[in-house]
Length: 175
Image (cartoon, rainbow, N blue to C red; front, side, top):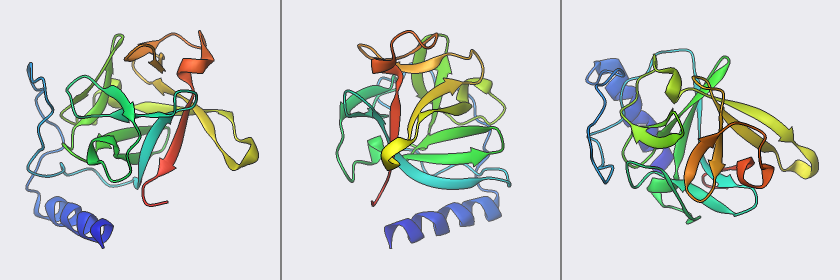
């Protein structure tokens, strides 16, 4: 029910053209406050809502703060739910709490207002292994070709420098 309502709200916002997908970057906010609603997105994508968990630490990416952190995974926590927009050749991850997108500028990983034209908000999933029904991935930033790294906070690093910190598992919300 909650999922159906979320998608009907997104569809209404898109069709009404109430929000622009391209937004100006926010400045200096310590806490990523909830937005009025998700931005309108261009056609040609599919979505899934996922938790993004480090394969060895078993903690999840959390978008509560402007700088993305790792927190113990907590089912139902919108700060840890990411709407994965799947485009041909890359993904965009929008936080389900504040509707900001995962952004990898230089070594810093943050949530910023979504901007589909910004390569720092585009990510490529690179399969490490998919044995035993558990797919494990590197998540590479399109702009700088570095991967998400959980050491000691969420950063970008050249890869593969230490796979224990650079491998990620997706868990679909509600499963």
